[in-house]
Length: 335
Image 1 (cartoon, rainbow, N blue to C red):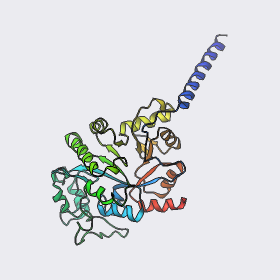
Image 2 (tube, one colour):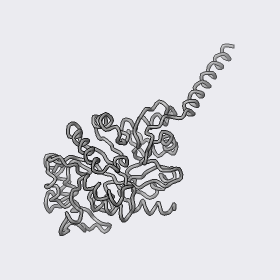
Image 3 (cartoon, rainbow, N blue to C red):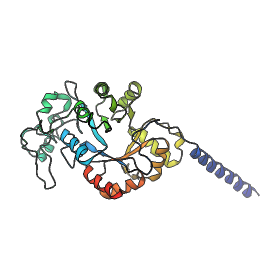
Image 4 (cartoon, rainbow, N blue to C red):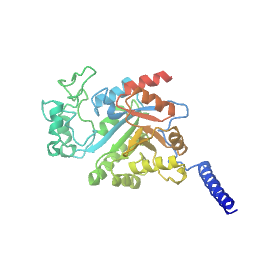
């Protein structure tokens, strides 16, 4: 009799838990943002984001690469990381130093440069250089084509060719009139006061190009910069910082997404994450749950055709890639 009663109580508990999860998943979640241009319509193909301008196709983070990505490939989104020069200009570069992409160390091999840069004090940091100093270097110097040839090493005028450091103002100005529909994924890399200054510089730049204000999403490498963006620039769309992204993924997998209160516009994640055990993040359910919150799902950095196809069929909003030309070829298969 006691055993029967215990089973009955256990059954009621299980039923209550099942009902609880059913109810919280039926309640429509609050939208993270009301208007999100980074979410594609249901059934539409994902957008291409040229990561670093398309680092496989052209010299990364240069105006040359961004022009090719827009004009030759027809990407919808340009991606880049932001740093401040010594004299306060906001420039685009993947790393805080420039040695591995330009001839800042003279005519030596890339392997020699990498060896040199193991000593951090030997690096050429953007924060230590003026814009004019940066402009003096050829940022196509180490780029190799499909044959392994450094085709821009001896270019006659690297500035005219668009192979020098590019400011955010120059990037916006390049496309503002011809491509007002263009979108941007940008990340502010510095922290502390320099990060705050970068936020202000970004906001001032957008005053010159107001149509782009609603067409970019900003990420932050540091928590204090994320707080700065939320507090002082709330109108700007933000990508999920690592902690918020992890919380969102965790609550979705547990089916308790109602308890996630993130207010970001884009979930920018890899297809898997290694925490000692590899956790797969390429989930159709994750995409669907993000879309219920009007959050765009953007995967990085995908350079393999099969992986691209898998994400396309999952219904993602954007694929960030170093090889936008390959991504365009894959998308053509679906048209």
